[in-house]
Image 1 (tube, rainbow, N blue to C red):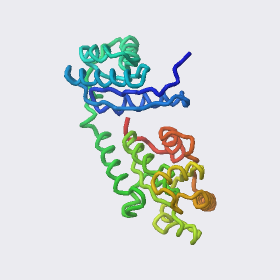
Image 2 (cartoon, helix red, strand yellow; image 1 turned 30 degrees about the vertical axis):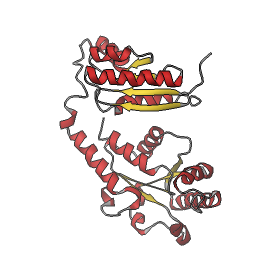
Image 3 (cartoon, helix red, strand yellow; image 1 turned 180 degrees about the horizontal axis):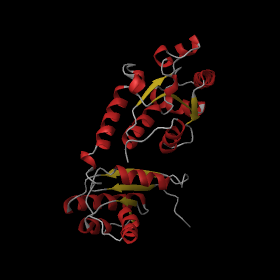
Image 4 (tube, helix red, strand yellow; image 1 turned 120 degrees about the vertical axis):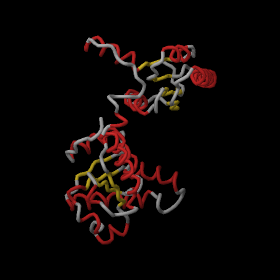
Length: 276
């Protein structure tokens, strides 16, 4: 019988760890009843760093009483061997995918750390950096300047998932995303903010279950009117009615991962990803 204790999950890489973490999250999402505590360990590119990471994994094993799970994309076999000496379940992304690709393509991998045809110098990389900066500048309706340059503008009530979705789309696909909160004043006027009305074709809405919204807001502003279930229900209902009236495409983010939300937006808005 499987142990239902909380599992510590490590994402270990000799690069940033973003890729292996993204893949690991996708796999773990198939086990919603498993409680996990996650830790990304990037830039493990020497034996000393491997030893330090090994100690972390061993400590998690002793503290939790069950084997940690380690997703890794480390290239150096010596570094990898040090890591494998910890008592954990290892899922080596390169072993699972690179070896079969080598066989299929009839060519040995370069095993170069964190590179794909010089991606750091590519136009795609530059576009993603520009997209990240755009998302940060246009987060939460801070400014409506240059909204015409946005590929998509996310709207919805506060804490419905707009910011993390904006950044994910920017980092993964180089999509320029602005996000704009719908607030009580908009509902009282019964119309979109003027800055958004000019870009209605770029709008995409996010909604959320009122009870889940209450939980999120309660963590931010405990026992406030902002977090009350009555206010959450009112705002969600008003936002959905506004989006229907204005013909804005939208989805409920309550039970969806950022990856699912982003994929839906990419499909619905017919965005052409700049990234890889």
